[in-house]
Image 1 (cartoon, rainbow, N blue to C red):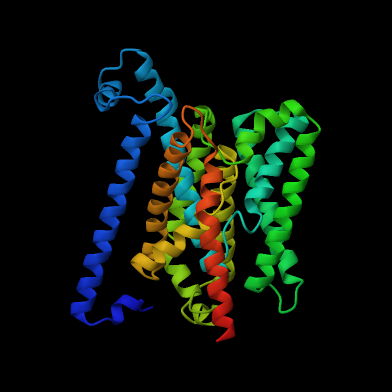
Image 2 (tube, helix red, strand yellow):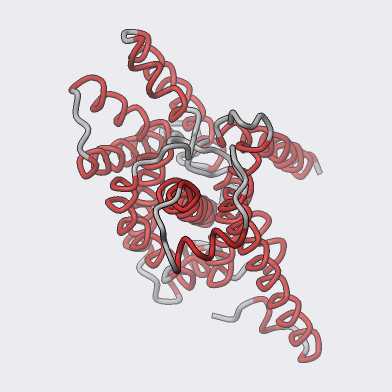
Length: 347
């Protein structure tokens, strides 16, 4: 299959590759700066020299303990969750050809969150491993339900039908989650920050439990770039190119469930990263999913690291959930996409 960049003249192809590499280098720099800023700034600022000594000559001081037991796990969580949600959104948009597809809008995050809430406060279970499996199961059930409801509409599982079904299911699951929490004031107090999407006080043992799932999901997604390129041309063309489209769709769906479910288990439902980052990525590096997927991961990690830093900085020494920051940033972008899609249909 010939990619769009391969059809460019040699001189334009060279400029395109050079500019793309420059954008990737800048994105890496932004993530690196966010990494240092996340370790330095917080309720109490820590000198850069203390960060270096915490990793080289740990002395058990308060600053070293804050860096290694609080800020480093939080930074790693933000990096992996941001990358996972961005890649999950890119996979969903490539699979459904729906520019509005992302785990939060299509109910996958709400399904995972409801499953975790029921298990923790309905049965009193707090095992990190079990919570991970429960979140994955909830995400899978929600994904299958959205596809089933979307296929019942006129024309079958069209992008519009799936989006409407996802929005309806998200509203219903969120209402059920709120109803469960109303039954217990203690439960509401303990989990309200998590439900808004927060990286504060993340359990490092849970991170170590979820991390292998996220890494497997990301590596699987990166390996699906060529298949997504074929699917973007249409299912008939993909089949003519030798793609087993049914098998590819199943693998993509499972990968999305793993990435979104494990992210919710770790940080709660954080919306809009999976919606915004793939669009920005395609606008910068083009339509080749072999580049779009890893670049989306890089942008998603950077975005969540910086958003979490803002959540700590705005009201410090207090902080607000990072999910609220992402909603404030993502809602205007969603409205822009909807408006652009409506204008295209009217033309």
